[in-house]
Length: 195
Length: 194
Image (cartoon, rainbow over all chains, first blue to last red; front, side):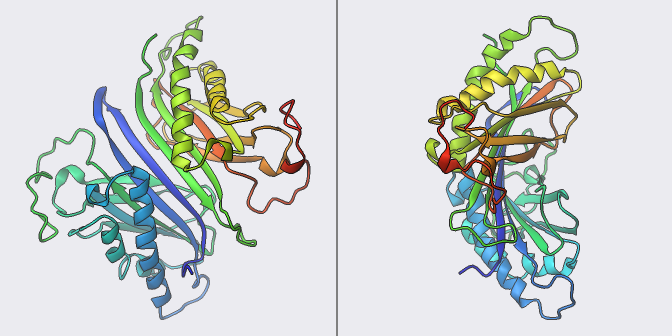
């Protein structure tokens, strides 16, 4: 039995085949899985947010697995990840924090095998159709510069006032034509999550 | 036959469990696929544009197959469909009209018993423009439970000299459909209408 009261789940995949006229072969690919859930604390102040932390734990696994599956790759082949939440107008930013930060990461890391790096995140409050930009960073070494990116998601009918949209994004690649230097994916050790 | 230049592919699949009413046992699934392609006629008036329609046929076939695969269903499970195009600002809405035949017939090749016309819409718009792509039943356009629309857009497309061509499919009726009309169980599926 699901803890989260899910109204819909959407999975988006985007592939870039050409960037500034140059072929990208294989294409860079990003996937984002999104759940639209009821906010149990909408419209009232509730001190203890542990229910939403449990929801975060459930969605970390569910959305992580869905996004990886949409790319059709082995979990270990995921190169970068990110998470974000968009709270409907009757909720608090703290509700997004309760979902994203305490417990979502561990099951997500299981879905992508490893994931030594902090999962980059963003949060906001907004109405239906609000755009959510999910930040992306290398999953094992946060300083890998080629993998800093973001993926935009948007669902036309969510979040309603008493809902929260929760998003997890993964990629099998960095940006299409990376050339701003810095630590490369090949050089990264992936032990401390940073380099 | 010139190759269609594809810059980007975007797909989306959505499972709807409820919309405030009783949750359904099998979620209503809706999917879209977008290809962002170069518009070979951007920036000038070209009288004979139909050759590009031929070029789009293989792309349409590939998109229809890829969309069904992304939705993870058998072709026979597709019950609704639609198509659309967004033409970048250096093009004409008439360029979007080139998508009617290759977009529509590609889905009808894949989906069995799809006798109904594929509903469509199109417009000229900038990067991030959103298109509400209409959806109707694949075998009988009058089936009221299957009328729907899927909003589709790509944040960085179409650029001025591009077009975004779109296909959408669904696996059934709206999740809490109760507006009456011809039910899918009563259709004859001969004329594409009823």
